[in-house]
Length: 90
Image (cartoon, rainbow, N blue to C red; front, side):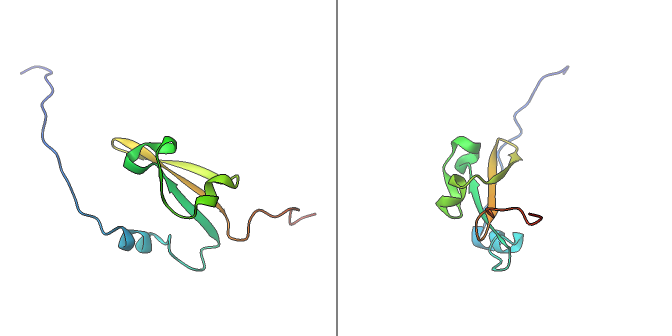
């Protein structure tokens, strides 16, 4: 009894990633941004990129970390036509 921890087991699931990407909007032609997902095997920014164009991560992207139960992914995004050289209000 008391405060002992007990292993409950492991759950595994098969996921159709193309269907997941489509349902999330990542494959929409009119998205307006290019997206990359980094962190294969939940290794976060130190993991391999597993979605999107290689150039996204090298183009000064906006990034956010997606926390997972056992690690993280990093989502990186840039405008479809690249960053503007002058601001809209200039």
